[in-house]
Length: 138
Image (cartoon, rainbow, N blue to C red; front, side, top):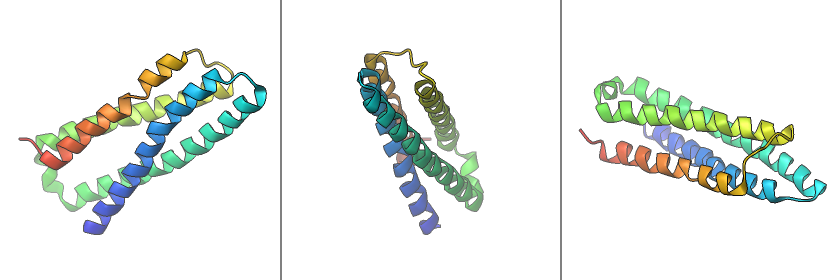
């Protein structure tokens, strides 16, 4: 169980690294003026999204496995809240994919400022998820 928990944390960290950096790439991409720079950002965004998606899938699989090994946690309200926030995080991840696709098809319409604000969402979710997982409020 401890090995599984350790790998869950490792994959969550990998996932969040991507969730923190990808919107920052969007900020730089929207400000890029040259074709070579924009093409470079398309490659970086695509590769980062693939890597962070692997982290997301493995984090979720490890999390589901942890719950299967300790099904009593399903009775805990904090876990219900944590899982709801993880679902929001998965929605944010999907939204990132839509933004990557929009950049790829030259349909990105948001400003650099919008992407900077968008970049704060995973930090807020991370704080709430970690507090729920560690403190386990009743």
